[in-house]
Amino acid sequence: MYSDLFASAHELLLRLIQTPSLSREEDNTARIIQEFFDSYSIPTERIENNVIARSQFWSEDKPVILLNSHHDTVKPSAGWQHDPFMPKIEGEKITGLGSNDAGAPLVSLILTFVHFYTINTPFNLLFVASAEEEVSGKKGMELVMPQIESPAVAIVGEPTSMNMAVAEKGLLVLDCTAHGVAGHAAHNLGENAIYKALPDIDWCKLFDFPKKSELLGPVKMTVTGIHAGTQHNVIPDTCTFMVDVRTNELYSNQEVFEIVQSYVQSEVVARSFRLNSSHIPLNHPLVIRGKELGFELFGSPTLSDQAFITKCPSVKIGPGDTHRSHTADEYILESEIQAGITGYINLLDNLQL
Image (cartoon, rainbow, N blue to C red):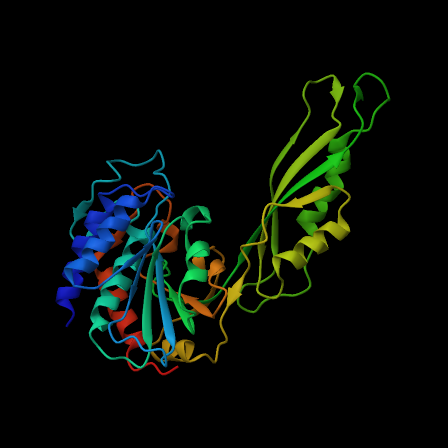
């Protein structure tokens, strides 16, 4: 039924894989995406390396649906068995960097936009191919959102096996410092900063945030780094440790920071409060439509550009498997891309907001 769309998605994905687009270096893939839209006579706008397109029958009295996926990739890991920028096709399997995350969701959303472009839908479609997603950069969706029309709802393309994430955990990174007093290790002098840090590290391991999310579970804290000492015979006067905090939708990052700060003795500094958790009401028309189509609803532990789409509710859904993301020999199946295009079109077809 959508064979032309499938073929175009295939060819576009191969071009994107062949074109390196590491985060903050996406200029060439942005150009390729613009050229692809040009081939359908679809005008585009460019903000840095973000590409934006709007539906043909745009009207100010219609609600706006934002379609978003990213075209940057992580750096290839050392385990690749062949050139990560040279697509390897074996049957329906396409192996290449960014094929799964997020090439397949990206091309599926692009061809979905192309499908609806000439249809006078009851909503406006606003498409954004974003940059710097993998590094939560400031020149991606965070830059774009204040400069585009306010959407009523957003669909974010990420590999979710076409299940619908109706909530997503946020991220808060804390740098903590315990202060002691330096002294000679041979004498009973000084105050060991490591020993002062240990109770706080233990608290991070054991503390149970009271608000549990039905979709995302509890807030999760993990100490992921520690550093202290300069030489064996000097008692360290500082001990620093790093905490990765995955927040649920029941707390803002600021609230979690204040709770941590109130319990620990160490100095606590948050790197950023930008990446909050997100969610959409389960009675939203888009979610109801997804349930009608049989999409499984879930809460996602991984971060995406949803963190910057704060003007409206959003869902995360797309072809591919999240467990393949950032792995060596990352791949996608043709059937998954086809299911992505078909699924997105069915999700939007006859949708009433």
